Every structure is written in structure tokens, then in C-alpha cells.
View (cartoon, helix red, strand yellow):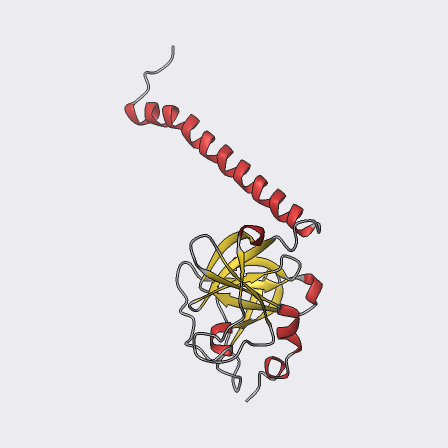
Length: 195
């Protein structure tokens, strides 16, 4: 003879399909995102789909060949006698990665670390164990749907840096700039983290 179910057990039984449906939708979304990233990395859409990130108050576009894993900001171990923009080292899946506050590297204010902040590790194509602290990851952006903007000075009045590529204006009049990470890692100032 079966025992009568309590109200809490009945609630759990009726909630299961909703939980299962949410998990299924989440898995489908993750699979679609992975598929889109792999398609973009395969070559055909590499110059069309770029990863949009917010660094300081600027919107940047990263090539998927040079941008690697995106992780939440965890413990960063500071290294003494280094530049203020060199935040220190963090462990990402067993690899030590140097973390750079790119906004500060460019002479701007420090990037605050909050719930939206992420570290975008450099991709394996660069062979450089480093990552950028970004304010937010804004997802994939299709530059084919944007207009190319004229080259102009940065908001702080400085000239365009050598790692800044094309600038685009999206349909919401927001300006995006391509960030050439391979130029960044070759710059002498970036390579000299010690004081």
C-alpha cells in the first residue's frame, strides 16, 4: 500500500518538468554558442564575427583566433615591483596567466572588479600566457552589420595606438575598435612589466 504524498513532495514532482526543461534549454543554448564560436574560428566568419568586450569605457572587438577562454575573475596574486597595470598572476585550469588591466595600460583609470568583470585569456595562437581584465563581455558582434568609422583620436585626446585596428559604428551609434592582441604582445612597454 502506498503512502499518501505530502504537499512538499507533490510540489517537487510537479517542478521536475520545469527544471528539466530549463536545463534542456540551457544545454541547447550552450551547444549553439559553442557551434557559433567554432564556426567563427574555422575561418569563414573570422573577420565578420568578433568578440565584443568593454574595457574601461571603451568597446573593443577581439579576433576569435587570438582571444581564448573567458573566465570569472578569481584570486589574483600580486607581484611586487611591477607596473600598476600588471595586476598579477592567476591560475586558469592549471596554467599561470598574467592579468593585465588594459584600460590602465592605455593610461586610463583602473578597471573595477565586480560581478560582470571577466578575464579574457589570450588564445593559443599567440603562445603568450596572459589575459586582459575586461569590465564586461558583450558577446559576438557581426562587423558586416556595422559601418566603418573614420580614424580619429581617442577620447583622452591621444592618437590611435598601434594595436588599434578598424573602428566601427553599430546600429545604436556605439563605436567599436578592433584590438590587435598580436601587436600588444610585441610592444616593448607591454613586455616590460617590472619597475
